[in-house]
Length: 218
Ligand SMILES: [Zn+2]
Ligand SMILES: [Zn+2]
Image (cartoon, rainbow, N blue to C red; front, side, top):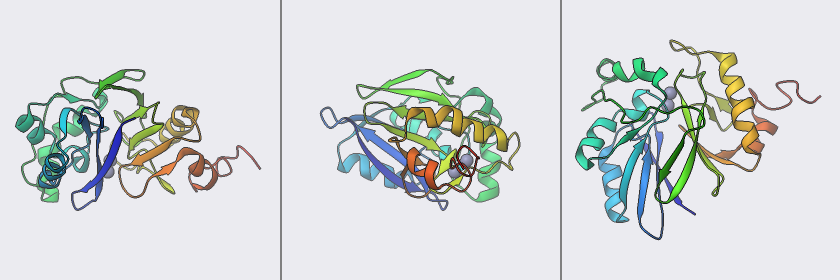
């Protein structure tokens, strides 16, 4: 079992997640979008050594501090899927537009594909490619803990925006119902923004993707 800590970062309160093994205090970090001082403090207070940086997708609020953190701690950058390259290349421009500091583009050490596995902190995460919000968005699923880091694919009571370049609403719905729902109702997910939930709860109550909203049951 890993431990998980959500650290909301940037003015967009993006849920950066640090996870680690309580036995070794080694771990990983998902979507360090900014506010590195908060992240550094948490790591040092808990004596956690990071092994890698995982990226769900190329949006500024999720990966704005990836380059700086990777350089500082000599960490490999894993993900997202290569279809988000245009978002990552556009980071400096986006940073200027939104007033984010110290944002650089980066080249991931490994692009991810659907079905890939990522080994970190003695645990294995399954990679699920979930396009729709961005074309290269991936989800990281940890089967033993039944936890998924889903970025901006789905939120408690909502789903990701699809009005960006290469966004696609129907593709996002398919990603959620055909790729995430099969992982099981009991999965707890950490969304990119806002509170955690479970896939089962969203199948019951999410106005965009509940079974009732999609006409699966009457
Ligand atoms: Zn996003
Ligand atoms: Zn976001």
